[in-house]
Length: 250
Image (cartoon, rainbow, N blue to C red):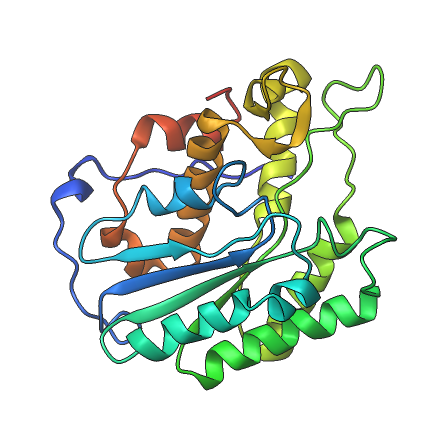
């Protein structure tokens, strides 16, 4: 799957956000997800770093979380409290990105429960006046031997579950899984491994600091594509966006 070039206007850094029917208030982003969203290893802080005032956000991602443990551990209550506290003054967006841990045999969460949990999350965001962004999971950068441009599509079913949950609830899909898989396949194993986490660079699931920047930018661009009225709330990085959407190492 190849993506068209995403062009950011050079002058957009000085554009003042103007209310529209969809973006009547400044934007706030509350990030719900597992370790691929969370601080230290996820894309979440990279996304939040692109925001321009008065937009703001909080990364509530939790390492090791499933859709069930995120609620049981009180992290979802943190998300909903942020919604309650802020929907009056901000258009409040919630990225919902789970799957890496839910899919494990040891998770205690069946696929059907996983999908139902995504739907419930989205419905609860809407009920509180927020805007859910069902965000399919960041791809793993795992390449079979001799297939340096064909990363394993290990989260295919979870991607479809996120899409189905969005359709079921009339929500927006941010298809990070498809975009990130296409990107790492295009740049190849060696370039993709430059984003690996850990001192030895062997962790192909999580992101190092530069990977956080790159994939945070990818999510920002995908959000802007889905919600063009939000563009003025993101600091552009034309060089990075151009590299990503032209399938070049960044």
